[in-house]
Amino acid sequence: MQTTDPVLVPTPAGDARITYARARGAAKALLALGHGAGGGIEARDLQALAAALPPLGITVALVEQPWRVAGKRLAPAPKTLDAGWLPVAEVLAEHGLPVVAGGRSAGARVACRTGAATGAVGVLALAFPLHPPGKPEKSRAGELLECGLPALVVQSVADPFGGPAEFPELPAGQRLVAVPYGSHGFEVPKRAPVGQAEVLETITDAVGEWVLGLVGKPA
Image (cartoon, rainbow, N blue to C red; front, top):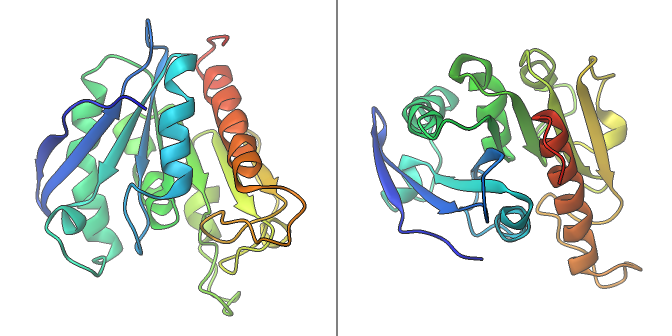
């Protein structure tokens, strides 16, 4: 994966940081990926997408929230996360490419809440935290169902924050890809009949195909 020097973006919540993995050749789309509340852009799924999608003509922007840039260990409230994302979305729009807003876990929630307002053409939700572990009654499905944009949800069947079978019926334009093995972080157990690389390839293939289809550009 080839990345450019990170770019700092001032936001009301502090400086956010964008690291680009730029498309090879003419870019067809830009996929913005935010991280979760328990980690950063080093997450295996985010790194896999940043490596696999640029050869398809998709620029990947890995976005670090201000709290991570500042070295803090705990994520702030959702409204603060949204405030840290909106100025970044403005910078990404300046590239003149169709922008898909996305992220993993808490980052997926941010993308769902802000995508339509920022002009995104779709939302990618990796490991969407449908509910807190063990508390299915506290559903966050509304954030996804009401995002008002085409959406792709990529969810592990073993995700304690909600497996594919727990999701309500998605509206037209939204679909869910079930990952047969892996944790909330798509980590594959040693006993699984498939390896880590194969699961990540399943994710990157599905996302790449969906993004290119969304913007009407063949691979």
